[in-house]
Image: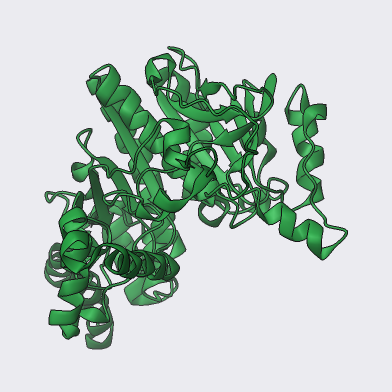
Length: 467
C-alpha cells in the first residue's frame, strides 16, 4: 500500500503522535494542509458494517489488514478490553516472498550478514532453514495475504519525503513495523503445518480445523460422494443419516447391518461410502472438537481458505455458516465485540443471482447484517465489484471506502446513490492515455472514506504494519 509520490520541499511536514484513543486509526486526510488524522468512531449499539471497494492491486487487502491491526491496538492496548477478530483469507502470495527475499539480500549488502541477522533474527533463521533443509524448500515461500505474525519490512524504505530530511511512510502515520499474534485455522492442510507457520511469522500459530459429522447434510453427502437418491443404498443412507440422525459412519453401518435386509451389492456401496466419509480428515465425530473451539480473543483468528486448505466452495460456505452460528453464542455469553473480515466477499457468497436460502454463506451474511448490531458483531467486507452483489449488502453498510480505483463505471453510479454526498467522489475508471494510467497507478493506498455514508473525505489510508 505504498504511497510513491513525494511531498515538495517547501511543504511543512508534521510528524504526528499516534494516539488512537478516539477510535481505530484510519489514516490522514488529503484535503487540508496539516493532513489531520482520522479515526473510526465506534458507537455502542451501532452497526459498524464497512464495505471496502477497489480494483485489485491498489491496496484494498492492505488496508483491510491495517484496519484489523488498528482494531487490535484500539481494544487491547488502549482500553485493555477483549475483542474477537476473525479474518477470512482467500489466497497466499508467492510474490510477497520474493519481495521479502529481496529485502533480506539488500540488508545483507548494506549491513553485512552478522548485523543483518542481529536486526532481523527471524529472517536469518527463515532463509537459513531453506538452505539447510532443502526438503522443506518446496513447501516454503507462500505467506498469506494476512501474514500478520511478521512485521512489514517491505515498507521500511518507502518515503513520503526525503527533504529536508527523510520521512518514511510509517513515521508519517505515527506507526512502526510490527507483528501481531495470530491463530491460523487450516482445513485438510495441503502442506506441512510447520511450513505454514514459518511462512507467516514467529507470532503465527497454526492449527487444523474440523467439522462435526452432524453439520454434513444429506444433500451435501449426495454431491460430495456421488450418491444417487433413487438407488436402494441412497435411500438407506438418507433414512439413517437424515431421518434418524445417525451421523457417525461406523454407527450407521452397524445399524443398517443389524436392522436391514440388504443385497450384498447394496451393502458394499453403503460400506464404501461410509469408509470414505470416515477417512476424510475434515470431519470428526459429534463429541469431538470442531474448528470453532479454536476461536480466541488472545489472537487474531485467520480462517485459511487459501491453497493451504483443501476445500470446495460448498465446504467454505458451510464453515462460514457454522462460524456465524457459533459467534451468536459467543457474543451472547461472553459479551465481547466481534469483528469479521471478508476479503473478496463475492468469491464466498457469490453474485446477486446466487443469493438464496440454499447458499449457506449468503444466509450467514444476511443474518449478520440483520442481527449483528444487537450482538456487537461487526463486518468488514472487501470486493472489486459492487454491481454484482446483492444491493442489501451495499445499502446495509454503515461506512463505505473506495481504495485506489474502481473496476467498473457501474459502481460509481451505485456509490453516488448509496452515499449522501456522493457527488464529491471523483474516481476515474477509464484512462485516456498510457501516461494517465501510469500516474493513476501511483495512487495506491489513497481514496475516499464515507462516514455513516453521510460525510465523505479523501484520504491516505493507514499502512499495514504487519506483512
